[in-house]
Length: 101
Image (cartoon, rainbow, N blue to C red; front, side, top):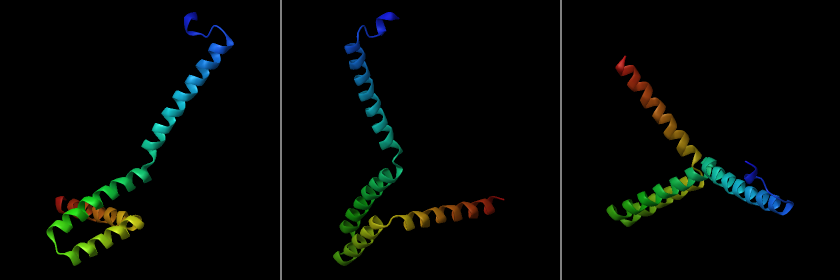
């Protein structure tokens, strides 16, 4: 195992610096994966862009404009929308449980 240890102070410093760099990269990658707020926002933005494009393709211009305005409102403050969707999911589950009982 002695082959893995640095032979002098310079090798030790280089090894330390390389290890720090690797740890920094790993922590940054983990931070991005754990940044749920940013990931959700990116996902919402992508879905809203797709929905806005589809609405514009199948409806008239005034309807598409109103949908775009609604999408922008959701982008500005997505928390109430998520709370509403979560509440709806819980309500549906409760109704399904009662029907199955």
